[in-house]
Amino acid sequence: MADSVSCPECGAETDTADDLESGPTVPEIESDDDGTISLYGNQDLFLCSNCQATLGVSL
Ligand SMILES: [Zn+2]
Image (cartoon, rainbow, N blue to C red; front, top):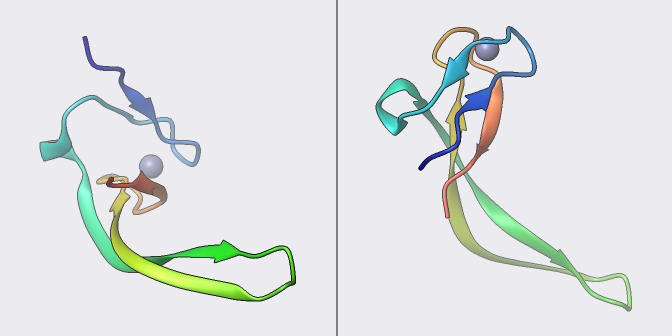
């Protein structure tokens, strides 16, 4: 059973990927203990199809 996602901006509920807008691709950032950062991979953002708020990233 899949969970639905409620948009924090407009409250629209989404429970299928078809209802999500694919957003820009962003890299993952990992910060190290010494303060440096590492970038790796790319994840697609999912946007609310109603108001374009960012809801999450695909894994
Ligand atoms: Zn929304």
